Amino acid sequence: MPKPKVVVVFPVYNGEKTLASSLRCIAEQTFEGFEAIILDNKSTDKTVDIAEQFCRSDDRFSLVKCEEHVGAIANFARAVQLGAERGEYFCLRACDDHSSPDFLARLVEALDTNPGKLLAACPTKLVGSSGSRIKAPNDSAFNFTGKYVAGQVPRNLTFPAEWIYGLYRADAKELLMSRWFELGNPWCFASYVVSEFVVLDLVAYVDGATLDFTEGSGSEARYRATSFRDRLTQRLKYTTGCYALVKKLPDVSWSTRMKFFRMCWNDARRKTRYKLFWVF
Image 1: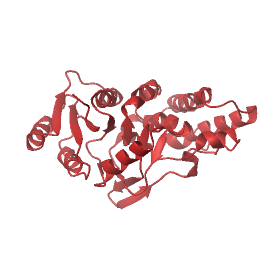
Image 2: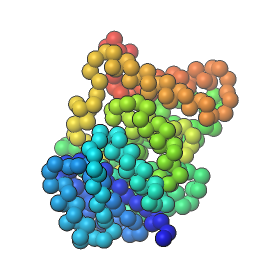
Image 3: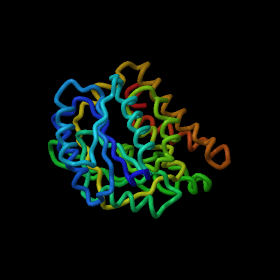
Image 4: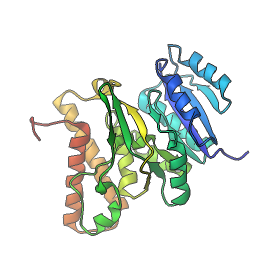
C-alpha cells in the first residue's frame, strides 16, 4: 500500500482544552491528501475522548495510545519516527497550535519543487493575549554554506524555532534523531535541532503561509535552567553541538571557523536567554 503524501502527527498529553480546535485546523486545510495521527502520551484528562470523537467524524484521523508515559522530547521523537514511517512527508503539530489554511499545500509544493531540501518552513505567527505578530527569518538563514565559504559568517543565525513544526521529507528522520536528545532538556532544543537544516541549506522557505504558535504555554517556567551551573552547561552544550557542524561544511580558514564559533556562542546566548555574570 503506497504511503500517504503527508502525515501530520499530534504528540499530545492532557490537551483537552485546545486539541479539538487544532485538529479542526488540519481537517480544514486546502490540501486534503493527508493522514493525521493523534499520538496520546497516556493523558489523564479527556484528551482521548476528544480524539476518539474526532476520529469518528473524519476517517483521515486516527488515534494511537502509547503504553508508557514519557517526557516531552521523547514523546515528540516517537512522533517523528511514526510520521517518517507512515508518510512521504510528515509534520508535527502541538495540540494548541494552528496554521493558515494553505499551510500544508504551500509546504508540500515547496518540497515537491525543491528535491534537495529536507524541510519546508514558513513564517511564524506568534499569538498571545495582546494580539499577534509575525516572526520571520533574516538573511542569515539562507544560503549559509555559500556565505561560510566566502568567510561571511553572521554574528547570529536568525530563524524561528517554530520551524521544528515544518514539513519534513521522511528522509529527514536520521538527521533529526542525530541531534534530538543532545541537549538533554526541552528548553531551546527546537532551535538546536533545526540549526543543522539551516546551516546545511536544507530548508525550503515559503512566504505567505503561517504556523500559528500559541504563546504562554509555560514551557519556560518548566524547563528553563535556574542555577548558574545549569545555565552555563546548557549554553556550552548548545555552542559546542552547533560548532560540531563544521565537520559537515567545506574546509575554510581558521579565522572563518572562529567566526562560526562566535556565531554558535552568540546563538546559544540568544536562544536560551541565559546571561552569565549579568550581561555576558
